Length: 296
Image 1: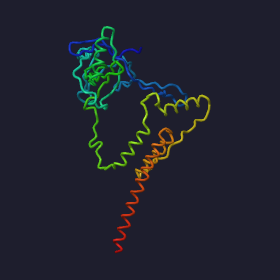
Image 2: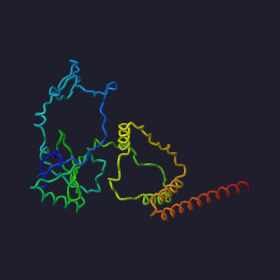
Image 3: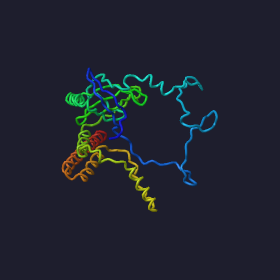
């Protein structure tokens, strides 16, 4: 079990339970050290006093808030502890909201919320009640010198906690999602078929970082004294001129990848072909009539 990042009490109403918080996800990337090109020695970073222009030790550093250009209020660690709110040790549920109303854009970091021995029964009760009612809990929590609003949601009989971005931290884009494009019903129908053809169960283990894998192969090749093979770059995608034609070809390609769906995809592709042919025929007929009138 990894070390917990927070310990305290979760409370709602008159019920409280001792809990621990564990990090739910952590990035894993290949990291490089900075080396001197000439002798490959590690490069050190130093903390330098801008006034005296000399290196200083970390224990000589204090935190300061610049309230005026070049003037600071010095804050000591003990002073920060004095003003920690009650949420530093107790996480109080403020309200419950419908799960469907929570926009995932507000989710920041994920944690496992787990009960201590004395809190297992109320913890299980809360998790089951949230699952059955399809509600999430909103609470306050202080950790790492910051107070967070957090979201608690049921998951596999337990509770997941997500720190939440505040409204002023979410970047809104004006007119996002609003276009003057009139999508045709036939195009939507085929898009549905394409989605169904590519549908699969969500299995996170299937997904991986291709660039990370290529980095590992490159490092191994260098260790073995081999040449690094360049990855074939895809062609620059061409703009879609005929959307229906692009959908038809996409379905045809998908049918090759998924044999079980070949018949359905072929039928869909044929529908598009017939629709397209009828559309072109109608357009040609219209043009012919216009030419006839003009001749008359």
